[in-house]
Amino acid sequence: MSSTKFHPVSMQDVARAAGVSAQTVSRVANGSGQVKPETRSVVEAAMDKLGYRPNFAARALKRGRFKAIGVVMFDILATGNILTLEGITRAAKEQGYAVTLTMMEDGGESLAAAVDRMKTLPVDGIIVDLEKMVPDVRTYMPPSDLPLTVITSAKADYMNTIDEDQYGCSRMVVEYFLERGHTNVYFVSGPTNSVASEIRKAGWRDTLAAHGIVAPPPILGDWNADSGYAAGLELAKKDDCTAIYAGNDAMANGIMKALEDSGVRVPDDKSIIGVDNSLQSMVAKLALTSVSMDFSAVGHKAFEMTVDAIEGAKNTTPTHTLIPGAIVERSSVADLR
Image (cartoon, rainbow, N blue to C red; front, side, top):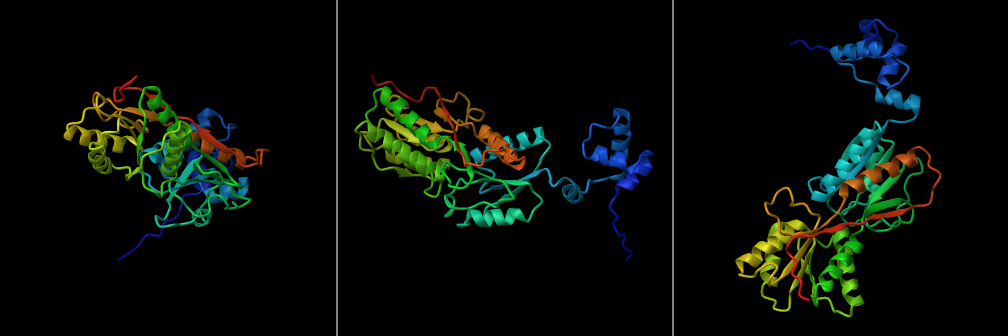
C-alpha cells in the first residue's frame, strides 16, 4: 500500500500561484491594510484554492502574540455559561481574536491546575469561568506573562474578577416580595458547590434579616426542573409559604408544575420568582417573573479586560466588577397589600 506524504502549503506556493511576492502574501495573511483590494482578492483566491493555512506559531514569534484567548469552563451547556461564551466569542470576533476552549476537571481541580493546562496552548491570555468553587480562587497568583480574568462573584486578591451581581439579585428579589406584602420568602437553591447559588443564598438570608425576618431553611436543588418539582411538592404543603425564590428558571418551572399538580394556584396561593429569564423563547404565554442576568455582557467585558491586560493597560490593581440584573415582571407574583 502506498502512502502520500502531506506537505503544508507555504507562502511561497501562494505567491507563485497569485503572481505576487511572498511579502505581499504575508501582508494579506496578517490583515495588513497596505495591499490593494484587487491584489488582496487574487491572493485570497490562491489561498483558498491551495488550502493555505497561516503559520500561527511563526506569526507569534514575529509579533509576540497568537491573537487567541483561552477560555476554561466547567459546563458549556449550562444556560449562563453558553451565553457567557457567546459574549466572549462575539468580542473576540470584533477584535480579530480566536478562542481556545477547554473544560475544568469536575472533581476539585484548582484554578492553578486549570491555568497550567491552558498555558501549554497558543494563547495570549486566559478567561476562567468559575461557576463552581475551587480552593485557591482568593489566593492564586497568576503568571506575570499571561493575563488572567476570572468570572466569579468571589473577590480575588491578585487578579481581575467579574460576574453578575448574585448578591444584589437576591436583595432585589426579596425586596420585591416584601414590598408587595409578603412576610417571608422561601429559597430553592442550586447545588452547594455553586459559587453563584451560595452568594444568592447569603443575599436572600441577609436581606430578610435586615427586615427582622428569620429565613426559613433553604431547599436544596440542582438547577434542573426535576429538583424544582420535588421542592414544589414540599412547598405546596407549607401554609406559611406565600413567596418562593427559585435559584433559576428551570427549577422555578418545575416548582410551578408541582404546585399545579398539588392544586395550589400561582400567584393566588403562592408567588414565585426565578433567575436567568431563560424560558421566554421556550414557554408560550410565560407567566414566570424572573431576574434577567446579562451573561453575554459579562463574557464581553471579561474579554475586554483580558485584552486590555495583554496590550499593557496601566492599571495593575485587581478589579472586581459586578453587572446587575433586572426583574422582568410577568404574572407569577401576587400583591398582598
